[in-house]
Image (cartoon, rainbow, N blue to C red):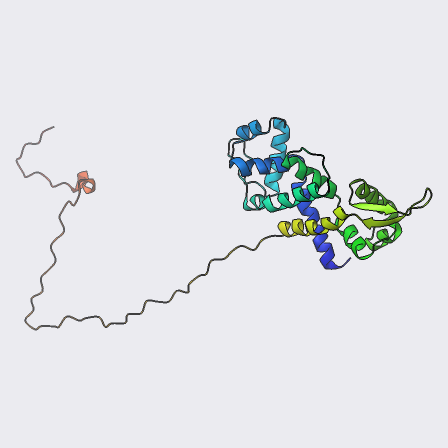
Length: 263
């Protein structure tokens, strides 16, 4: 595989690893609909998920950067990465409906998670890329092209055939046949590209910084003409006590001699 194909497969695999775990899509779409929720309120919207499983899923989602925090009493909110899953979820749902991967009726979150289950195979991208350019390849040829053992490639082919992504033809009882992409497999190539693009780190937007220049005085400073007969007036003397807070016992004036002092 070329370095570009390897990177694409890695990005797609990592992206699916973040969004494919069970109940992740349900949490993301619930937060999209209702906004930030405390864990207790989020659990009420997902009564079919136990509290322990939901807590583990939130911890994993926080580690993957999909939600901001999984603290017990802090509202759960989507990060920009988690909020950007809307287009990916929409594409997954359309792919599932177009190829009848899940019998209707089904909630949209369940349809998306079922579609991700069909794609959750780490060697899916190199398999699809090879069969797109080499239709009718055998398992042996596929294993050689993807640097896998025959047993590993055979396992992947059987799994993807069961998922409806691949189809095997011309096989016999003692020999495996030729492999082809189904229509769902052909459309899955673009879907994996979208997931890989979503998983790639986005550059931070940098604000344009205006260079600072020292302030230059454009007009001359007016000068006061000097007069020989000018009289210099001294500034007024500062009061002895400007504020009561500044008065200290040792700075108070002493009473005059002979004055009575009240105790």
